[in-house]
Image (tube, rainbow, N blue to C red; front, side, top):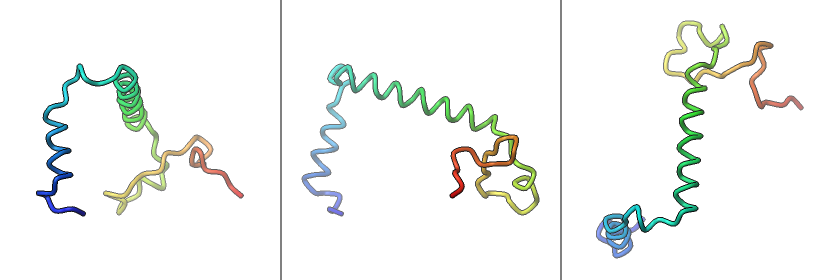
Length: 80
């Protein structure tokens, strides 16, 4: 990793400071809007995901919950 005072970091910082919204190409703006909309949708869906009773037991605080369908299977997981 280059030191903080490297020309690369300075160039990147200058680029970020001088960048204006008007300079961004239309396709870039549309793609970022799509990504942000997807992020909001995933966040909203995540708040409504039901937890399996096994994931609600004591001692699981701070551990990631696994969303499950009604049949107890993890969505998107295939068994070999």
